[in-house]
Structure formats: structure tokens, C-alpha cells
Length: 419
Image (cartoon, rainbow, N blue to C red; front, side):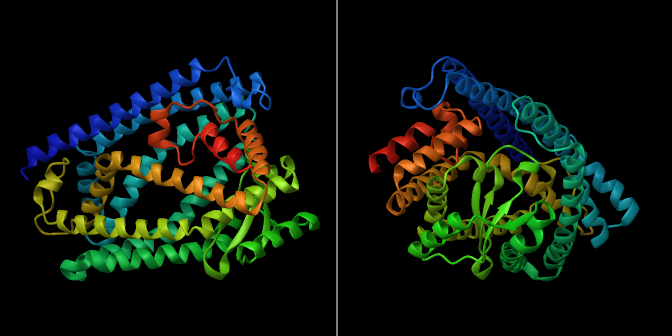
């Protein structure tokens, strides 16, 4: 493919992605605002108008910020690619460190640092302005900074060795380097799944064993009925950072554990907590986690195979504003350009991912209804929608693209049939 054609295709894809995102966001804002003055009939007896309006305003504020992020992100993408940002970084780092592994790692790290630094003000505004305004923020500036420092150190500890191995394979493993890289990636992902519950998550939050014996007995009985074995039941101090509540299970194999936010336990009754957990166990019983992992691994294999081909195409580099070196050492350039451009070309595939995720949520709800009283899950969801200020009236098209969970009305309608 000639360079000019690929550049034009990239520009068209960027315009289509940005235009679609902004259009969907504007639809969401208008739809939510239009339904702000009336609680949907199925929630009229459980959610007050003031709470519904608060959720609408919260949704609109977050979506407006997202629109700004979309525009800034697109500008940064064009600046790094077609306007020569990556090219300038590559030349500067090469003059300083050469084209060996150190210089290539530095290039990848520099691009990550730039994009992360641009995201930082948005993260701050979201946390300390929007979340604060709506009563969700409980995070201090110190925790905000410490979390990000820990994230950088953790990313370096895991990411830099992995990056070195990938670059080494790209240079030493021949034309099928991408297959060996995929194997390393799969092993790395499995290792993180095992390490996350016991070693990574405790770096950011405090986890204590569940002490409520009555609730513990109820949950253990549920797990026994579902054939689910976990390493333990834990309560996470989510209230240190946010008023939002949740529950989840994490880990892999013998390292699986169930985690409740302390904010969730403070809000829901024992039967409602059991119903929420039954939903989470539904994902386990329906093998949703395994299915998603297999799909992710298959897609990553396909993407790495594509990258293996693109690294040999001069138009790939030049079409994205970079002149590859004639003496080699372009592996880091290929990685950076590929992962900058990939989201642009696969954006519309997210529609299928969201559709599959919502299907899985319905299946998990159906499973929960066979193990607990469906009305308990309905009651829990209504409380969570209200407490988390989740809008009850999202735009249907916006939902189709972005919502991993079904809209409140659809989800509760189905559950009420079981009840």
C-alpha cells in the first residue's frame, strides 16, 4: 500500500472515530437532559426525582469532560504521528542513547509518559471537581499522587522487563517473533492474574477478612451451592477513595478471592449482598471469564501477526509520519506506531464487545435468580443505581457502543419476570 493511501486511510479513520464519539456523546447528553424531569415509571416508587436529576446531571458532566478528552486525544495522536512527534522523539533519543535496546525502551517509555501526562489533568478534574461536586470523592490529594507514583513504579517493574523481552524477540526470533511474543504475553497475563489479589491490589487498598459471621455463613452456603471455591472473603476500604460501591471476584485458580467494597456492605442487606454475589458467581458458572480470556488471547495473536507483517512495510512507518532507519533498530518505532494507530481502526469493533458483555450480564442475572430471590437483586440494583448516580435514561445508541451492562430498565424488567 503506497504511503499516501495509508495516510489518507488513517486520517479518514481518525475523523470517523472522533466524529462518531462526539456524536454519540452529544446524543447521550441530549437524551439524558430531555428525560431529567421525570423518573421512569418502573422506578417511580423507589427512586426520588431529586436522585434521578442528580444522576442525570452527573452523567452529563462526565460526558462533557469525555468530549474534551476525545478532542485532545485526537490532537495528541495526530501530533505524535503525522505532525512528527514520534519522529522527533526517535531522533533525539537515538542521538542520546543510540538504537540499541536502551534507546528503544526509552522511546516507548517517552511516548507512554507523554500520553499519561496529558491524561493526568483530566483524571484530576474528574476526581476533585466532578466526583467532589456530586459527593463521591473521598480521596485526598496525597492519595491521588501516591496512587499514581505507585502505578508508575509498578508499571516500570512489570513493563520494562516485558518490553525488553519483546524487543529481543523482535530482533532475534526470526520471522515468527510475533508467535513467541504472544506466548510470552499469555504467560505474563496469567502471572498477573495470580499475583494481583495477593501482591498488587494490596499496594493500593487495604483488605481485611469479612468479619460479619452471619453474612459469611450466608455467602459460604451460596458458594457451596454454586460449586465455587475461593481463597477467602475480603472487605476492601473503597471508602478511602470513593463513595461508589461494588463487589467482585478476582484472581485465578487457587488464588481466587471474593472482595466487597465497604461502601457496598454499609448500604445493602444480607440477602441483597447475597444476590449481588450470586450475579458475580454467574459469570464464573457461565464461564464468561474464561471465554473473554480466550477471545482476548485470540485477538492478541491476530494483532501481533498483523504487527509482524507491518514491521516489514515501509509505508506503515512513513504513512504515520516516521522515517524508519535503514540500518535497523525500528522495533520500538513499530510498537509505538501500531499501538497508537490500532484503536483508531478497531473502534467500531467495540460495538460487538459491548453487545457480548451485556449478553453476559443478562446471563449472570438469570443465574442469580436461580440461586437467590430475584427481587433481592432488583432491590440491590436500585440502591446501587441511586447511590452511584447511574442514569436511568441513557441514549440507546450510546448504550449500544459503550455500556458493558444493560440499561437499568431492561435489566430490571427481565429480573422481575423471574421474581
